[in-house]
Image (cartoon, rainbow, N blue to C red; front, side):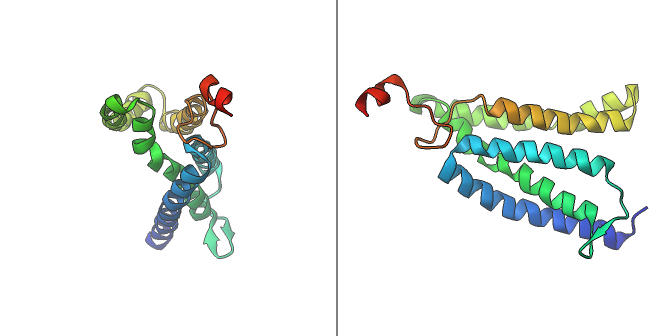
Length: 167
């Protein structure tokens, strides 16, 4: 369906989204709070859903539409770059190493995703297995919004009673 040049273009443009996405989401998390990055994760889930159903032969501005969707997808997915620091911030200072361990434990569990995909694919089909990813990303983004904001002054930061009394 695709020649090598088209596949290379899709991957290159997508990588460009990752590069600038990590910079943007790092800036956004420092400026607006760690939970703002959840919207990037939700964006990634939406973009990969569109990617799955998009026609592969549409060209927009000289670029294959899948390359543009891949750019936006990787831009959104890069919002997860904040997780390492965010997970440690969720814990009190004397337990911060456990937050980092939890983050890296999640990465280890994530290595099982290809095997889970194959397990589902063998019992259903590849399309059903692949649709699990955007669903999980959107749910994860929504769950991320339920976690506490760790950046004081972030848009989702909730003052506790002691801080409210001081103000």
